[in-house]
Length: 155
Image (cartoon, rainbow, N blue to C red; front, side, top):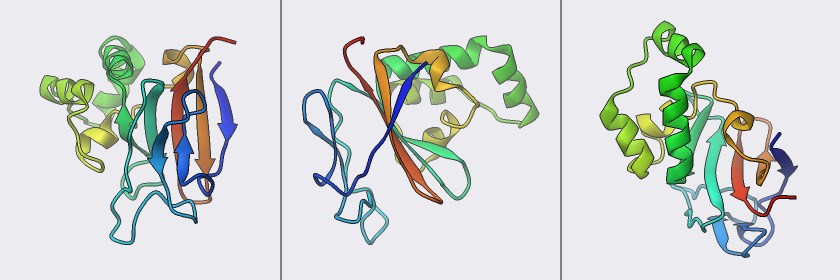
């Protein structure tokens, strides 16, 4: 089971990697990762960052802001192999093209576009794909939140 730790983004200008102290996700003093124009302050992932995902979007529950290539490959493989997920895709009349899979794996998507939301909302449990070396740092509010998965040493 993946370890989960609640955090605040109000400290240290955002979220710093607990392993290398690299500033991964910039935030303002109120803990917001979005500026007054609605743009993300910035993500600068370190090698320990598996994904950065937000929730509380208007049209979807979750959206990837960043996903590391190895984890993206695991998600795409799960989509292709898991009969339950394939049924969900069929029932929801979702079409996922090979081009969209390739873009997702390469990280070739923009925050808020179809790909960033599509792969984050297919009912894939983090515990199914992440090792016990990963901790998800969560900053959850009433209507939104951010989850940052960091891979470190096995405990």
